[in-house]
Length: 399
Ligand SMILES: *Cc1c(COP(=O)(O)O)cnc(C)c1O
Picture 1 (cartoon, rainbow, N blue to C red):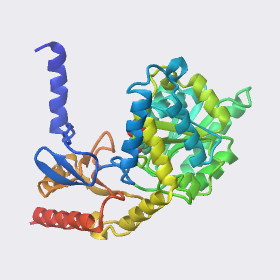
Picture 2: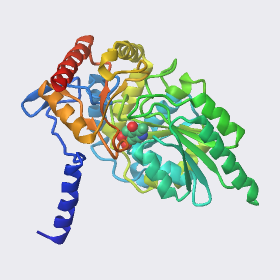
Picture 3: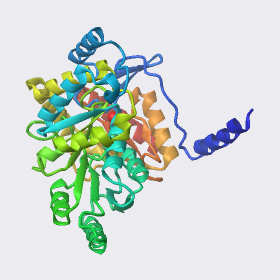
Picture 4: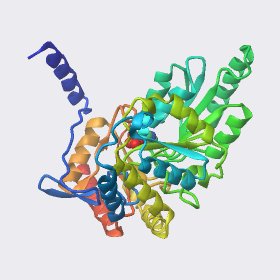
């Protein structure tokens, strides 16, 4: 064996010992509540396809039409020659849907975070993050070389202290606009399913002259009168400088996007390296996303959203030992120990329930959990099937 392989193998066995080893499971069916893994059909509570659009006929049709008309590949980066009509159509729809001046599509949400944060802040600036933000935001902040400060999850006092400190840095500098101060938070937190106090964060960032970027990955399509996200539901429309989203969760396709002012979007087209130096998303993906944006805004989107919230309100308290009712379709079932979480997930899978164990580094060490996610395509009966399998497993474990 080569030296490379032998060193990597040592690291992998260390991961195994800590219950942190990960492997891919091949799924042999479309994304839907019941998926096929090998010969087994399992009830799937692990997908972010919140509105059940990933396998929707309208999205598939739009993707096929786009392939017929524009081909399979995009050919190049948007700025070279890959800026196809479907990309422009999607961006117009996203801006209208979100109620912003403009939008920019990226190949993934991850790329959107990386390109945007690095374009907006640099080594002279300050980025302030909630402790629980997604890995792509942490990676982006690091890559930007800005000074990073982290506040405890949803802790407004700590955020205020950091904003005051950042304000002093600016006073000390000769330049009234430097350092730039960017606060970044998720609106619905991906692994805890709780909500950021966006209104209060908005007041703080305005008081202290900072800018706010909100990652709506798990909120787009689900919150607010027009289902724009938690920014809308919190009455913060027009007060958030940068909104980010993914096309891969409630919107059922793949890709990421930024919405905001026309100036912001023009700036990103010129400065966001993950946009400039990467091949444009394929026509099929953007056309499917456009169809999803149409659906979300239509009556059927409203209905799917209502179905989802109805289901969320029926999650039995016994499932998660929940202190409070879930406020999103993400319901974490806390286990703690990594190996115990894996064992629990394996046991549930034997009962035909698929919920993978979420472990470090996705969440902190010793904070492993099962992450139950509900979609509009699940039924009450599905939820009951889960609850009884979970109860049977828990009592089997206790005896
Ligand atoms: C999934 C996710 C992303 C990344 O989006 P992709 O389109 O999957 O790359 C960003 N932020 C959060 C909070 C996410 O959960």
